[in-house]
Length: 552
Image 1: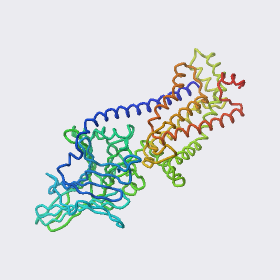
Image 2: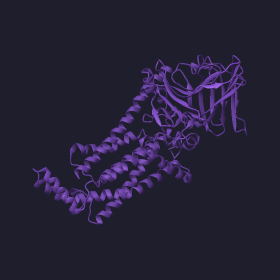
Image 3: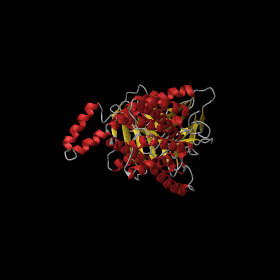
Image 4: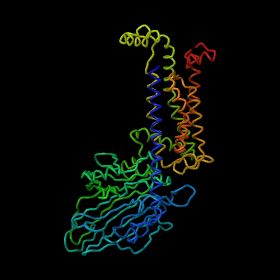
């Protein structure tokens, strides 16, 4: 029984430390970001691109700014997703600012590519391309001519979609054969303090920010931005050969990605690079050199994703792109849980109530394990007097004590690990639920009831964290794990207050899950304890039983 209590204590302490570190790192990042933001307030926006002429490409879901120098996407806003709840400003994903750069670049390089030495300056017939009512798409066309070769770069945005088709048409009238390769890459500042200064950018300390890629040999791999810069400095850039795949940059609820077009069987190289001043990290895809005969034309096509992590749409676009919803190493549990949450939401239409139903489903399915756990602990409690007698009898012979103890377990048909194994089985499910709720973009700016208008941010009035702390206090009072050590006892008594304090910074959806889970556990334990008492298996400690007037 002592071993079981120690295991439970260690698990709770580990969870406490992880939550505290998460909260502390968020505070440190925010303080640093505020200082840097003050230094950058007087700097003009778009300074890095002020010398470039830009055009706009607008659909109902994307508002893109394209620089004519290189034809890169230097700014992207998402009109259907608000930067902050209650305000009209669209979410700002890609940007070019003095304090932060996040761009999508592409070009033609290789032996004769126009981007080999310097970026070409394109021409555009219009300054703005806006989707019209009744149209399903809108295209921005950029052209560039050099040495008898005409290059046409076309971006096509579709209604209701976060995909952008990118097409290069090369018309070779130079009188000689040419060789060139297409590349598409993502460029971002390594320092993200500008983003973390403002929670409206969807950044939290525990969320992964960095790159990811998929290839023929690997479904999903991650690489942090600072790792790319470090590897680039040491000459260890990534180079992966693949026919199918994608590269992406991830920012909590949002992602930008280059993917190969469907039916494209060309060999690509997935690569990473970092700038010499260590400010920017790059990840991209490049084709091999393609021959374009004199008088012939050649097209290069790829597809972009710029938007939120909508799993179904991303999965349809490219295999494994939905894995950018980073559920961690327990993704195989988190994904089914999210599917259940989606199914429940399709009936209820409210993500808060859907979380409640999902919690009840999970806890209900765990009921047999929980009952087995408490039953085993109750049986172990009945053996306490006999165990104490064995310890006194064989206190000088540990080997004999172990043999007699195992013999007693066998006679009484008690599994000493029966109280711990169900708990250990449940822990991965609870951790998977945590990451599923943290990563689901559907919760962003989703209302629950009354004052809770955004499940992805903390409760503004801290009602849920306080209720959680109260439920944890009552759950501790019911706990069948008595602690006699004074230090351990103080730690346990302080835990409801510590958790309440930390949950004040947690998303309301996650806090709601833990609150409902605690309330259901209280109900569940009440039912189980009464059932065990009817069988003569009381979960009360001897002192508690004596106080209640029970001899059991």
